[in-house]
Length: 253
Image (cartoon, rainbow, N blue to C red; front, side):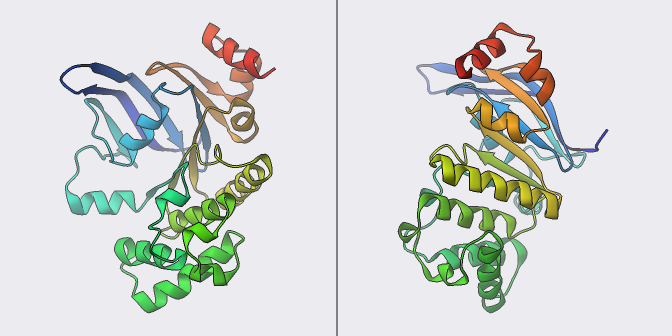
């Protein structure tokens, strides 16, 4: 069995605005193995994106713990957070919105290198152009602004920015859902290529069951904040254990 790089134990997340209490996650436990693609499937409101935000430190859990390489990453101090989150990067659904519209693409990528890796501005600029080339974009795209790129091109740039710090985990939260079928296929192909050459573990969060079944080693099924099923892709797709999973499968048949 492959070594576990990320372990989530009994994750609970509750939002309370004083009027309503929402239980976004209810004692969710799972692990991500090294060089694995783990798919998390669920409908809107199932809690799958909350998991991503907890792992990346955007939220702090109400209960439970998260371990990266055997070390708890919950409520870390600022310097420790920087060290960990260099190794855990995220690609969002809204690629264009994830960039500063007033800064060129190359500047956004090089800023990440300077901030998280301590690169000098001059060398970071050259490295940014090379990284864009690595994800299939011409080097001169470093001089373009986000609005000048297509959705698929901007998502490639976002992946280049995430990979610039050599992460061990790449979290893709609905990273292809805003793209057309052709662009989606190219982004998935790129992610699988990066996995092979960089040995990066990928947490692929989506509502698209057919897509995730083609790329994942294992699948988690989320429903209303609970992990209702998990297993190898073949097991979950061909021998579902829960009524909810069977309903998801029937909806795409």
